[in-house]
Amino acid sequence: MNFIWQALWFVVAVSLLVTVHEFGHYWVARRLGFKVLRFSVGFGRPLISRVAGADRTEYVVAAIPLGGYVKLLDEREGPVAPAELARSFTRKPPWQRILVLLAGPAFNIIFAILVLWGMFWAKGITELKPVVGDVLQNSVAAHGGLHSGDEILSINGAPVIGQRDVMFDLLDAVSSRGDASLLVRGKDGTTRSANLNVPDRDERVRLTEPAALLRGLGFEFWLPPLPAVLGDVSADGPAARAGLRTGDQITAINGEPVSDFRQIVARVSARPGDTLSFTYRRGGVERTIRIPVARDKVGDKVVGRIRVAQPTGIRYPDNMILQIELSPAAALSRAAGEAWSMTALQGRLFWRMVLGQFSMKNLNGPLSIAEYAGDSAEAGVASFLSFLVLISLSLGFLNLLPIPILDGGQIVFQLVEWLKGSPLSERAQAFGQQVGIALLILLMGVALFNDIARQLS
Image (cartoon, rainbow, N blue to C red; front, side, top):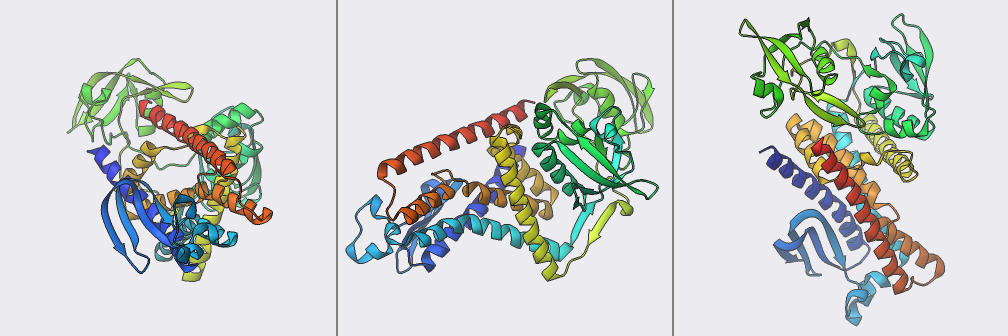
């Protein structure tokens, strides 16, 4: 059932964002006088088809909801009536073709800005303050002068508002030169500098792997106390097989008392493959059972798991939450700035990935995207809209890459024709398409490998 839920919201997200993208191509093409033959959401066999308008454009919803396309009149694909030659793609000026190609990615970015604008206008900005929690001894953070209770104010001179800003800025700094200068405010209210330095290139790449950054630097953000009560207990996990249920309170592990859920995680993680004694309380009665701990590989390490989740409904105190109300104009400005900064960060990190400075494990395939879609939809409307923003910006950015089969590659072809005064030879264009297909297959292969690796781990 969980897979069906994820697949459903994956189809909803992809279909919506593909429609936005293709509508951009379609709308600009129509405004510039190109003849549109087909507007298709999805590939393969048409499920719904309708012909309408003076141009008899065919509007299609197809069976495979993993993309879409706008088909324009093009004499390279077949004979064109003399009366319609002026509306053919190849007969239009290169600048008009470029505008049509740019429109798809541009509409994805505009869509993201509009969604962000609505969210910021309706609810403002809610952020968790970037206050440091535990700092590991002998870690990068400890050596750099970061202390528990510090509030991070800026990174490399750029002010930060919340935890998300800190994560993005640290990822950017670590993957570029491995050095981040932090301005922090300590518990006593005084400000000072802390410097996080990761000189080893291979270690920097490892830190850019998913969920590895803060753990590798040796600190975490402050978290409210978590009672040692079990949240969701996986039906096929070691805890469930031993008889534990959601709501059970763990009081001791191997005879040592526990009072916080994070203590359970720490002790179980450190004992993969061992059998531990758990004392728990249910309905006022205390019992003890033994649980064999599963071995899970996380990155280069093997950790212990008993397949339980932390308790739900834990709230942060009000003094840890930053709420900023925005006027409509301020919300629009903030939305545009956010979309630009996220797109620019994608560009920098993608380039570093090509250079081997950023982990390829960050490439997500359809399985991971479907999982995120389902989880965000389950978390609520705001969470799902935030997911759509990220995916829409990614779709816009990826389609601008200069890979021949994508919009960006086609734009390069048009620019070359514009500059040299004549189109590239059919042989050169065909070679470019083959290279583009090969690159896309490579990227998709890496992303799918990452998906499968995550599922197995």
